[in-house]
Image (cartoon, rainbow, N blue to C red; front, side, top):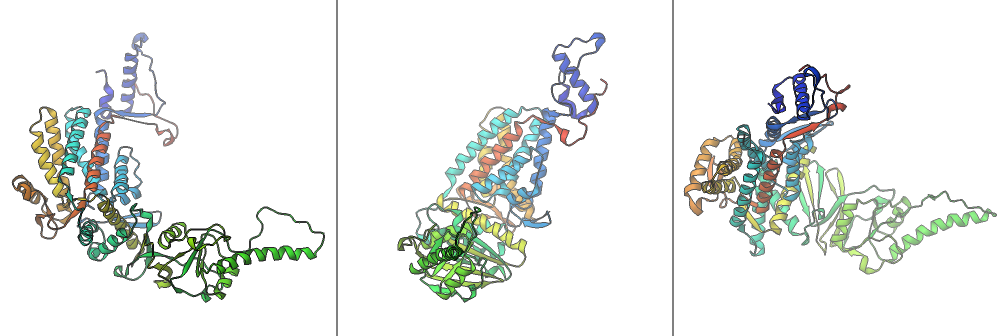
Length: 573
């Protein structure tokens, strides 16, 4: 044959390389003497080029291995993964977190990691679903590849199926806009609770859903995530977590005199600075030559006068709370304490931004012009002990465009996982506020799309019919995996779902897996809702990634760095 390399995985490496060289020589028109042909080496020795069908199937298997890791975390009854890395332990149920922590090196399997990350940033939730879906599309394609169907035929049909599914998804989405505030809040709570359902804190979803919704509704129209602060304080129970309508941050490093400052104000004037209030030695090795020792004192005095002048101006502006991004030294701390002013230096940048938004103040780089316009205020400022940390809390803020969630809990890993769950939930509620369309979860929408694509495939001629049918079959993996993870009989549940979707008409459209009763239920009625954008993004990303893996038929890598001494011998042909 002219391309032995296609079957190369079946041959020993020596035989393979010499066959390839002969083949190359033949194609290059090599005329050897006595049957010997000069071998033409195109690539550096030791370079591994695997190509053809074998390569594609090995890539599909690699993606499958990745998906098998996160597959069991899908849904309300999904299991968690415990990852041990650099001495740190991470317990997580979030597909994207698991993928990031795994450090996968296989080039094709990396596409799985990328789609999980992109789903995380685009929709915030559905990271496990997207990986499981993509893997199932590839699995369905694998049989066709093995039978010799050209990958481009598969890709074309997959793209077509994806386009049809996305159109239908947009058509079926349920509008939740235009309701009054109370109804809207209830709807958002349902979405938040659905997202929290599959997390570690599923039992506390009724406690956390209102916190998440209130945090998101307090935001500006731009819905900036930075404006929701999440602070973790070990200790206490999960139910001790609370929401601050304003800003809360950990007490900063403080000097002597700090304890004499008042720790509670109502309606204080708040001044935000970006200057150091301490005596500094000169940075640029400044040299001052004096001809009279008397003058030395005046230079020292000048330094003190400069800092006192700054402090006097702050006091004169009537500020009662002074925050600075840079250090506030011991002299300034004592000075403020004597005048009943609270101060905190080295405030983290993101907390400072939130204080700006909440209190309506602006950060100053000089104290020369502290006019009332740039000084902020809030209803109540206090310093509170939470666990073993002290927190400075600004609440009842007039601008009120920012909130802080303070999380409590036993183990550190547990709080970290709670934070990730809350983040997913916040993203979901943000999306639902922006695009007020939802679809029922629980595998209902996947079953309905699957039914639609099967019906559509019957009208198509040629190979595409089979391939779109397989795409439809692949969509069923979501309800199947949900049932498997809950320990239900997935075959039985899928049969009941297929029957319901086939004959139920409009009423049967929203039937999905019932996690409580081991059966099927109307997910719309049961308030298992997800924003439409999650499903749209998951379908598009999974199809794109599957097409990407299918379109690769050769991987070239040079393992010179891995092996001392390059590749092996030539072998005898």
